[in-house]
Amino acid sequence: MKLDKYAVGQRYAKALLSLAEQEQQFESIHEEIQALETIFNGNPKLGAVLTDTTLSGLKRRELLKKLVGEFSTLMQHFLSLVFDYQRMAEMPYIIAAYEDLYDHKMGIAHAKVTSAVALDDEQITKISQSFAKREGLNRVLVESVIDPDIIGGIVLESNHKVIDGSIKHGLEQIKALLLK
Image (cartoon, rainbow, N blue to C red; front, side, top):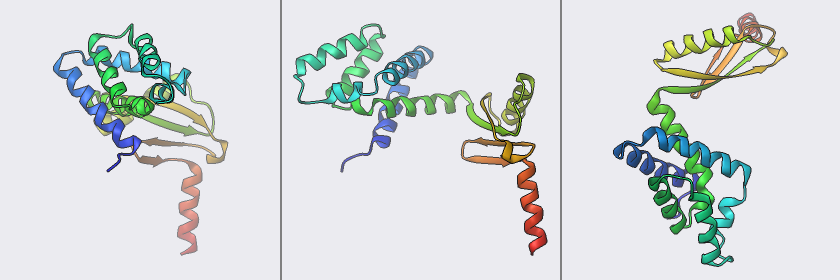
């Protein structure tokens, strides 16, 4: 059975996380994953090139050596394994899955806060701390979005949860009650 890219990402990320913990390189591997993410974001076709069998294995291996040269031995071995199994095209999925696992382990969540007007840093910090406390998290990283259509209040989206405290939502609820 052929695995989809998401499943491949999950499997390799779990293995890397487990190995990083075992080797007590949890934080350093996370930093290297972030560096890899920057490389792959800057070169979106890199994974496809490293997996392309029309290129000679020697040329692809030379590219891999250039890619992994600055990384730790653990990360070099991991990338060589991914390369040997011709999974470099799935590297963005592996990186994303690793970031998710890391965030979960560290008690970090990402949230999108939508407001009708721009929020200042103090307001964002209060929202972040309040949501972190409510959800039992260590930290919440907030992305602020402006949408004048919500009229006022905020809408917070995180971890498949939506907390809608917008005036627009309140008006829609009142309208629904009146139409009953």
